[in-house]
Image 1 (cartoon, rainbow, N blue to C red):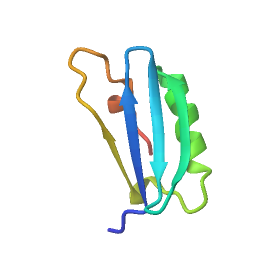
Image 2: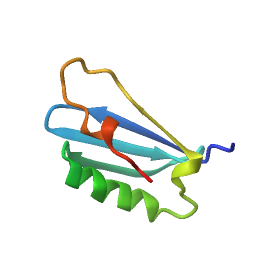
Image 3: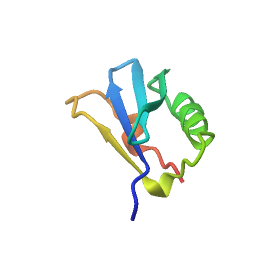
Image 4: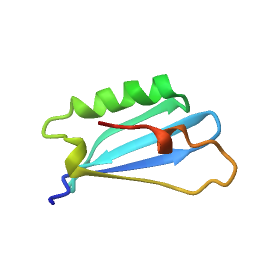
Length: 77
């Protein structure tokens, strides 16, 4: 499998900071609230990026202990 996009997510209780890297440059940098509706909207933005597919992407977020991880439970498909 070829990885074309790397998604980094900085988690806080209220917000998520997103960065999408294509191997050369950051192609999307945005912030959303930490809610299912905002996560869906951000994923929609990512899917609109040229050449972006969920199957060829990896995501990473830090362990934040007791902060709820809406994004970790989200299904991107």
